[in-house]
Length: 341
Image 1 (cartoon, rainbow, N blue to C red):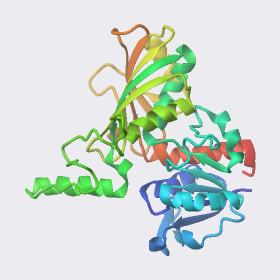
Image 2: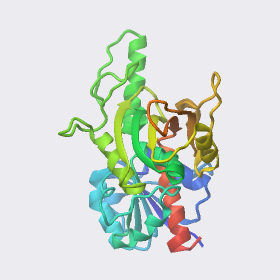
Image 3: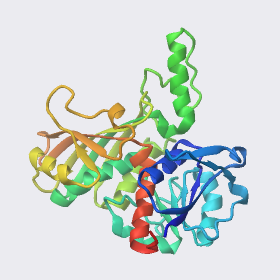
Image 4: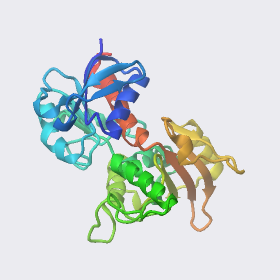
């Protein structure tokens, strides 16, 4: 027996990826609905590679009664209106927006990191998916934290334009094409030209000079992994279509060598260690696209501090950073609580 599953925001990048991953992982489904805004009503979307087409339903008229799980990829605005309605109708909401992440009554889950926290979902019938940059980082940090206890993290991100949605991807493509033919590269979605450039600005600025994206990485890491960890982040948008990269520097309470860290990461769930100290012996965003893993490379000791390591972390942000993590949460929910499949 399978589940009745709703994908809300099914026409967007993440919503489409959710449908693909549900099919790839053979999630036990009896019935599936693709739901989006009124302007997408009737749009047909393929469910996996089966050739099965789903017609998008209008969220304004959708009744969540009798449905088991709703994967929301619709942004904070629609989520604020419709997620509580779905939850009240008995449908468990797994939300990809930032709306509920810091709500103390809503668990914020990365299944490889804090699976036990999912038990708190019944308070609101809602589970939050973390920010894309946080999700891949905590997968890397968790096994190292268990081994040597992390004190402080300094991270610089190199985030792809798909993190800003289809508009971000379109802008990179259009600006790149325009530059090649000698036309102007007008910034619309981003604050500055993104083609052949990097922008140290994601989301809005806060009073302390950090951006909200940087704040999310700090707050979410504390909630998911350990409130004692100190973290500072610089989040940068780069001209890459898909795949987020992170340069992570970690300070530990206890001694840990690079070779010990490599051994730990090699066996950790959700991680693929590719760390050859030679030309090409590391993973870049182009190579991670379409993969489930969080890739770790360039693990090395930091001689400037006691018990320090540096590493490189790459993952498909539309997958582990969003859609895959949401489906993994649904799988965890099924194993621990719903128990239909």
